[in-house]
Image (cartoon, rainbow, N blue to C red):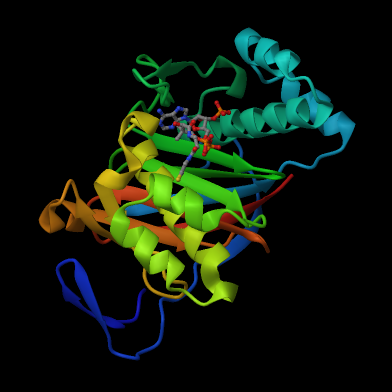
Length: 271
Ligand SMILES: CC(C)(COP(=O)(O)OP(=O)(O)OC[C@H]1O[C@@H](n2cnc3c(N)ncnc32)[C@H](O)[C@@H]1OP(=O)(O)O)[C@@H](O)C(=O)NCCC(=O)NCCS
């Protein structure tokens, strides 16, 4: 699955000059029918979706939404935000239906104290963990049986203020590493760090109640995605796995999950 490329020395890595990680390949597929999707215990399924869909598909997606989700859509001021919300939520319901066998519209969600959605008790297969993220015209979803999962995707927009944002929100070590990168790598390094931090606070469900400078992640482009320190502890950090992915040109993402040795299956949704 992955090539050995670094020597693991706790929070430090020694670059051995060996080939980098195999990139995760996204395979184009249609959404399977209800109950047609299986998750193995060691699998993470990552799905990506282009939410730029024609009006008729948006109407069909809206029919799958719960009343509250429609109301939320209607509160968006701009049509494009409304469309993106409807399409990504409709597809989340269709994917959950494909895993659980429940009709998309009958799926019910619970929310953690900071808003993390999960399947409501009483739903078929409540042991499925999932998380979703969106940026511009892309939505991504992660599903697993292995435990709470966090996923984040970001559009690689220009970041002229990357250094000052990093100084304010990242750890001192991450900030230093970022500003030492060559100019042409700063944006990618910044979003590597951002997506890895977001994926972790989404896996735990803490959201931004977890100060982002209390854990360190790798960010140098091309180096493996890892957590280096968690509340100052390298051993706690090493219990987490990260998977870096590129779901479309100019987007990057990360999945965070507690544990090791997962296989990632990545699919690009064809509607
Ligand atoms: C949960 C949080 C991390 C989501 O952030 P986000 O980047 O705005 O949004 P994403 O697109 O990645 O994820 C949104 C989805 O995550 C899920 N979500 C909501 N709360 C969540 C939580 N506490 N934990 C995990 N997932 C959550 C929902 O499915 C949500 O979808 P929805 O918007 O359709 O309801 C939030 O705490 C937040 O507001 N972050 C702000 C971003 C920021 O400033 N980051 C700085 C990084 S350096």
